[in-house]
Length: 183
Image (cartoon, rainbow, N blue to C red; front, side, top):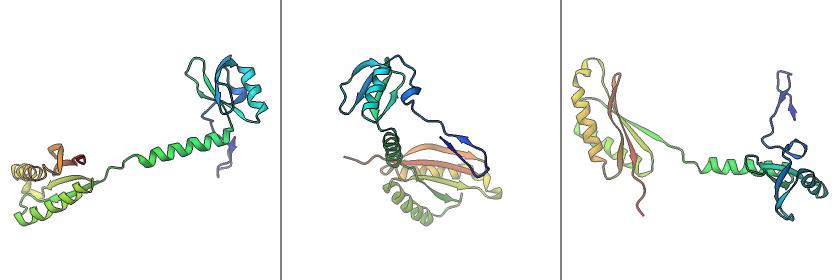
């Protein structure tokens, strides 16, 4: 099947499965609805598919012998796309929430940001907390380490440390992941 892109040149779309005459195996394992499953000659399999006005689709080319299914190819492709979309929808998307501290963060600000972090972890998001060093405050690295360690200790019942405090440029970062739900 060739589609015409806006540029005017043709683009050939590669089919993901071999069908009918494109199947090169001499024998195939035949499956499908209203069909007796078993190993048959390729010409017999094509004839069976043709009598039912369906296509012969190679669904497992690496098997010995290859597995072919008698099915309507366009319907088969639609079902495969639908399955892929379902798998993609079920895949969990990781959300990372960021919380910024300064090396001289006050206790009140710390508690306020801690409450936000607890809420983020409860809703299943990861928390990336960092201490941003501006100008000469970079000399207070140990304050940043202490602050992030205190932060992770306060969140031990809500999340676990995924990445220990690490200095990257002017930022010292720690990542916390939510704990799995208790059953």
